[in-house]
Each structure stands twice: as C-alpha cells, then as structure tokens.
Length: 451
Image (cartoon, rainbow, N blue to C red; front, side, top):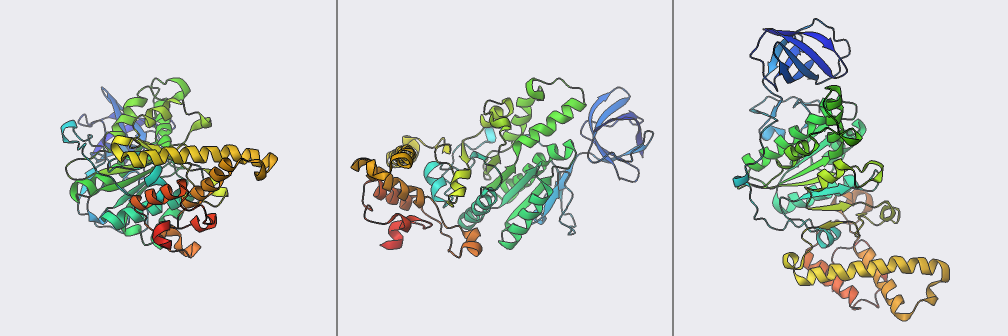
C-alpha cells in the first residue's frame, strides 16, 4: 500500500507528502522495490521529514513509498550468537538466519525502581586493571587509546577472561569504525574461538550518519537480550561513542535543528543520557561497558567528551610509550583509575599499595631524566633503591595474555588480585631486591611462580 511520495531530496533528508495519515514517527518507509529505506523523524500535517538509512544515489523525486516496518528491529534470540549485524538489524556476515523473534531497537531505559545498585567485583584477571582500575559488575569504563597500542587485544582478553570465569557473553558495537577494522576483529575473534561467545554490530565509517547513529541502539538491544532473557552478566564494548555523537550532529545539521558550540546538537545531553541509562543492571543481570572515547584535538574539556565522561565509573588509558617499550597491556597507570579506588571499597591495604606504587613510579620518571644527564652513579642509595624497585614494578604489570599465546608462545595467565597485592607489597618492601628485574617481565603471580 502506497503511503506517500517523495517531494524533495537533500543529503540525508527526504521530504514526503503523505497519503496515509496513520504514519508515525519512527516508522520505516521504503520505495516499492525496497532498495531505499527511510525513518520518519517528524510529521507536519500532510508531510513528513525522513532520514535516509542508506545511500540516496539514484533516488528520484516522485518515487512512491510504502510502510516497510513499524520500527527498526533486530533478531532477539539465541541466533544472535557469533553473528555480525549492521545498524539496522540486517546480517552482514554472509550467512543466513531464519528468525525466531525480533525486537525493536529503540526501547526505554531501565526504570529507576528496577535498577540494581548492589553489585560485586568483576575480576578481569589482568593485573594492571584489577590493581589500578578495579571494576564492578555494571560499571561504565572509558577506554582511551589510539591505533596500534593493543586495544583490540585488550578487548579480546577481557572477553576471554570474563567468559571463562562467569560464562557470560559480550557485544561489540563499532560506531564509525573502519570497514577493515571490523573484518579484522571478526576474523581475530573467530581464530581465537571467541566468536560464539559474542555478537557484533557495525555502523562503519562509510555509512550514512543514520547508520553510525543507529548502531549504538542496535548493539544495546543485543546486550539487553543476554541480560534480560539469558539472565547473564554481559560485557558491552562501544568503539567509538564519540562517533555516535558526531553522527547525531550531522543529522541535526541536515534537519536544520539548533546547534550549540562546536556544532553539537542542542539536545546533546539527552542523546547521551538515552544511551547510558540503557546500560544498567537489574534483577536479571548486569551490563558492564567499555566505551572508547575519541578526544578531539586532545581537548578533554570538549562538551561531548565531558558529557560522556560524566557517566563513566572509571577510565583505562592505553599509552603508546608503554607499547613502544614492549610492555603489554600498554596501560598508563597514572591516567587509569576507577571510583572503587577508595579505602572503604577496596580495603586499606589495596588502597595504600596503589598510592605507594604510583609514588614510586612517579619518582622513577623523575630519576630517568636525571640519569639521562648525569648517569645512575650520581643517585643517592635511596634513589637507586626506588629506581630498581620501580623497574620491577613496571615489568611486573606486563602480563602474558591468553589471546596472544599464538604469537608469544607464552601461556596466558589469569591472576588473582590477592596474589597481585602480595607481589606488589613484596617489591615495595624490598623482599625481592636481590631478584633481577627481568624475572618480573611477562609473568603471572611472582611468588606462586617461584615459591
């Protein structure tokens, strides 16, 4: 049944004269051959404004439109395991799927009285994270880092370790990702035998703004399936949440909506809130998210960055200098933190060890500059002691990872936080002063290894 005709075409905006006045905001319209699809975003008497869900190349004014679906929907069953979808719920992995059940992707956030605020620690088995930026189930963690510093490897290790310890699943959302990176991640997960434990959604860089914008809600729907239907604690990775904001800004600009400074939409806060408030725990399970955040022009005061960070419970910052030294995971311990770093939450011993470790590593950075000019012999005995202990600490927080065993030939290790505290305390108190620093490189728990 024809519901309207196209009367004007812009970049991503299409104006439609309506013949059926039962059309509602959020409905998906398509041309008769279903080659072009549009979402209704506003209705004004006899006309509707729509955004294109794909390329408008070849589209003509006067084309008749029909109602394609009430909303964007995606598979909502166990058949999502190991599959890759686009932002609109269609499979892009080249395999077939006979649907059991579908669900619309734009749903309300968890109601306030249904949110579960009581949680428990979620050990990752990765020493540097569990020590400096411990995580609770349901946390939102910002993941900051550029290309080539080990972000994908860290994501794979987190998926492996959390699945091994709790049998929970993961969802990866690529918002504005390069197509190449999406294919590489899919193949790497398949080779690491982790693909069956996760689902992937990609709104790639070459997609329309609608594709990049809708990818987040589509991925959240998959995560909600694991939480609400499978009753699991779920991992959610979003790369990159900033691209979602950029896509919304492009749509707002095209729709002639009011923009604020730096071209962001005036409803920036509410757009981010809609996403972040869906990432919550309830009686069924939790969604623990890791959200990559691009920092435009390295400006941490940027409105979009500040709005996203206001929802974060902590951040993990990947550091290129650490990667150049060959120390993986290449995490900057000075910039990585968690709201759990409090003596009342993690215990006085853990808190004191974090403080002492950061002081030691900070002093080490100062001493490196002195040594580069004067040489190590010019240091006092106390500074030499700090220097050598700091090098042991720096090496100790490297770790053999399960997902990189093929490349390193070193078996991966899941390290208990109690063992980490014992080892760090031993290094700081001088218990291991007579041990060469190389013995601490790429190991799990030192005392367990050499006891």
